[in-house]
Each structure stands twice: as C-alpha cells, then as structure tokens.
Image 1 (tube, rainbow, N blue to C red):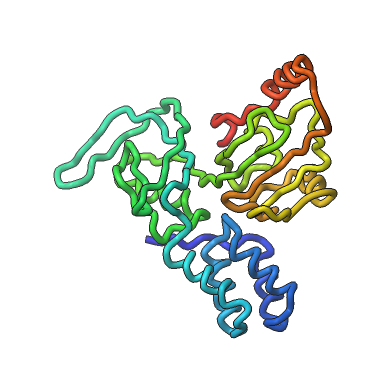
Image 2: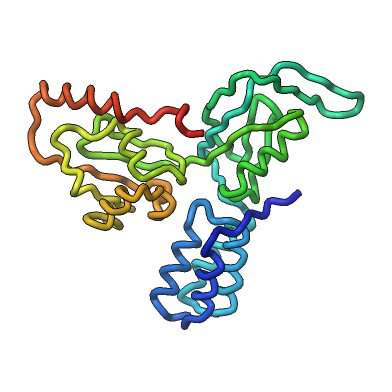
Amino acid sequence: MSRRGRSRPGAAGLIAALALVSPAAAPAQTAADSLAHRTLATRAELDSLARVLASAGSSAQRQTLELVRARLGAGDFQAGDRILLQIPALQSAVQPAGEPATLAVAGQPARADTFTVGREQELTLPVGGTIPLRGVLKSELQGYLTEQLSQYLKYPTLHARPLIRVSVQGDVQRPGFYFIPPDAPLSDALMAAGGTLRDAKVKDLRVERNGTTILKGRALQEAMAAGRTLETVNLQDGDQLTVPSGGQVTEHMRFVWLVVSITGGIYGLTRLF
C-alpha cells in the first residue's frame, strides 16, 4: 500500500536551492522551516528535505530535521483533528463468501460531514469502521481513504479534506475557533466567522501565532487579494486572525452589517467540494 504523494511544481527547485547554500544561511533555514511546517507538504517533498538537512549536518537545523522525520514516520494526524468527508449515500450491500461486504453506490446524493480523529490516531466512519491514520500525511488523505474504503465500497468516490483550527477574533460577526481547509483562500477564515462588521479596520488585519504577529499590513492585504490559501501563507493550527475595530458602532448599524455579513459570508460545507 503506497502513501507516497506527488511532488508539487517548484518543489525540486526549492530543495536544490537548500542544498546549495551554507547550513548557517538564514534564507535556507527559513525555507526549510516553511516547507517542514507546510500542512499539505507531500512525502516526496519531505523526503527530499530530510536528505538535504541530514547532509547539511547543521545543529541549528536539527530540530527542523526531527520534525520532518516525525511527520514521515508518525504522519500528520493527532487526536482531535477534524476531517471533512463527502461519501455518497449507500444503496445496497453485496457480500461474497469469505470477503468483506461491498457496498454499491447508485448515483444517490452525497452528504458532507466532519469526523474527529480519535486518541489512537484513528478515524471511525459509518462505512469501513475504524481506519488507522498513523503514518498518513494530510496531503495523502484523499488517496489513502479511497484505497481503504475500496474494500467496502464498490465505487469509492469520496472526497476528503483535512481541516486546521484557526481563531478569528475582533470585529467579526462570530468570533471563535473555526476548522478551515488549508487549501481554502485566506479570506474564507473571515467568511467562516460571518464576515467583518461595519466598523472593522480590515486594512489592519493581522495574523498572530502564540501572541506574536507573523503577518500584517500590505503583505497580508496582497495575500488576500491574490486569493492565497491558508497553507501558502503558512498558517498553522491555533493561529489567530485579528480584525481591529475602528470605533464604536450603533446597534442599528451593527444589525444592518450583520445582515450583509451573513448574506455574503457564511462558510458552508456545500462549497468545500
């Protein structure tokens, strides 16, 4: 059973660049750290990065190398992680003697739902029972689950997306934590919180990690305008988007903006696939 992912365009160039620079060079360390933490990094990318870091022999990069090796060995999924799945409705079951039950799908509507990873890095589904996720990267999830469910589904056409937890705070309709696909546009995090309120200072939006601002100002505005995803700006589990307020808003205006936000900003499961 193969869990090996395909390299992305440009990945080979990044690895080559890392291999050519001095182990102590800050740009190389930054590029290595970024790739090591990238949510949807493929196995090929992480394998290549591990080889580069191991050959460099830099003590400063040892922690990054350990992280990469941990991902390659144990996989990406931890207890409490959320996964969004869309599995077609099941119509009938056929069970040949001595073989697992095979369920046939007959063009029935599919339903999207979220599932939580268990404490033993397992996923329990209504079809296929408990599926182990240890050793599986998030970039491999779709192919891996399709392969696993092919033992039970005659035509496994499921869609699977890992989710990361992002906090959205400040002048938004529904501040809180939201689970967002890492390949979704950064602006979708704001939409998940119902959109910004009337008096929000969107131009002062910032991204924070452990209380430290990691992205703000023009760079963040350009990222959102370009439709960059959570992953391409390197957002990680637990990061926070903060939308400052420009001042006080009357209850009447807040209600009006609430209607506008809900109309254009609800982040529903139906738009994820």
